[in-house]
Image 1 (cartoon, rainbow, N blue to C red):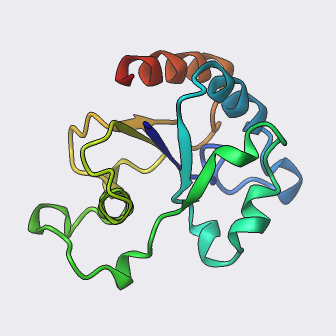
Image 2 (image 1 turned 45 degrees about the vertical axis):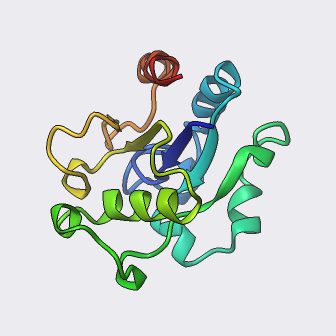
Length: 150
């Protein structure tokens, strides 16, 4: 079971956009996910700190919602962060979720607009331009990357 770790701001909508634009790129992500049904999704967005998992799942279409496997743990609550990840909060959270679910050696990809939250040259990061969020072009590239991992 491969995992897609998902950020919201800068991915599902442009960073710092008006509330009316929230989730304007979600259809692109959902189209991509429909092409790779093997993937489950874990939400890494800071939205997980203010909203329940049920509230977060409600943003997704009925066919994609069941593939939301949960949310990543908060960095401040992690007790076993490898030294190599101490400076890379989001990647440490992804690793902790994988480890806690017995999936540490399973394929995964994180989609995010903030590279500094991951180790440099991390092959498991799909970087999105935060000023636009996911686009049709980057959505097609995402599908290609996801397929390469299975």
